[in-house]
Length: 235
Image 1 (cartoon, helix red, strand yellow):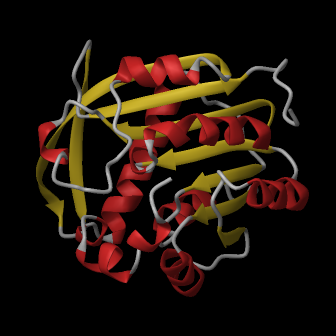
Image 2 (cartoon, one colour):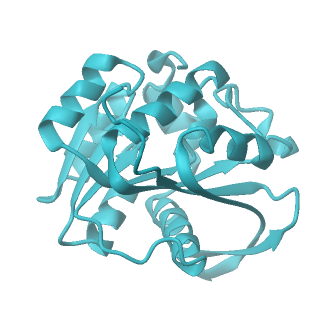
């Protein structure tokens, strides 16, 4: 895993994350959730959701609004991000924690506190995890999910040229590479690539984003995975 002290105030306030306002983050969460619904992967109502890499919690609150009867747990490796989330996006059905799922004690904490999750939601996070740590993160996902638990994820495509300047993108992969990795742990895996085209500002605080599916090379990779019922969560 990339060193967590990199994700400090400077990263979140002046880096790539700081260039996104709250409405953009919420829009991105909505796009990911809509894609899951449109491909008929996600139709149920989860009761317990893990927002992996929640940052300031803007997207986490979107999930809490979409699933008002669910409890949302937001985790991030950054202490600064979690402090901001607890200060600015505190809700009755949300809890935030600074955790590293590659650490067994942190994983045990979540399992003992909450049991099995119905859904793990993660957007623009997997690319920040080192390639040699990603398998351990997916194994942690499986251990945290119930027998029919699902992962809904989005990550940038490795072949997207304008992402090269972000030094925190140490875990970029192609869609094919992600599919091979997820299939090691999950029973059902759907992956597709989409190219996006930003449109003009429709309203002052509502920027549209049009996406279309490509057979190969899209800037965004969407990953939907269902946990194998035979997988032993405690192994």
